[in-house]
Length: 298
Image (cartoon, rainbow, N blue to C red; front, side, top):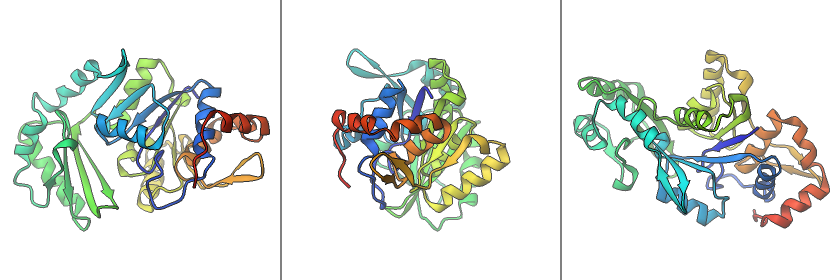
């Protein structure tokens, strides 16, 4: 494994209802360091909110940031983060010259959609809330019909914000998904599918989780997402590259990780690289991890 691409909220960030195993993040950081694995955060957040999460949770600074559900890819350059013009130019062709504001005008008359806050919009992403009890197939069809009037080639990503109790709709260029962004990063770095791990937990991660890249759904992923992963991986023939964490990963000192958040990402790494389990079972290696990285309290 040479590249870890992970979602943030409720995947790496322990901001869901379930608890986090205290050892999980220190062990994950040490695993990445030990095996020289590059790190990319792949999030629905914009760049500012990704950077906020890094500070708030004391995360490792990544090599690459994918923001806005895949519509922005930021690379480090002289102490700042620079949006990839190559990626922006590539995905912009799908919208036939239109911007996020143009998409907003197209969808003004679609019932049930409420535009999200300005901070959650971008040049190539338009995002909405909708009620959880909405007929999603009908809503999708109505949005698609409006977009087709302007020959907009779009990807519609639906997921849930359970904290706010609303549905989320992201309208993106067809290529500008998390899965498409991961493919772009792999090509840029020259990393094979089998040497990449994608980790996620929710509806907007499913396409990447079943794309053929080695992937893990953390144990705290909701039941609908886990079911969608099972169905779609069977349909696409990608079951061998798709893993769902359940907890119970053993660590030296008679400790078991619960599979939530970073513990689930570790479990995925061990599934695809089982020889690395020896690191976790070696007391000296675990002690080194805790000496190098601060312990996260449960």
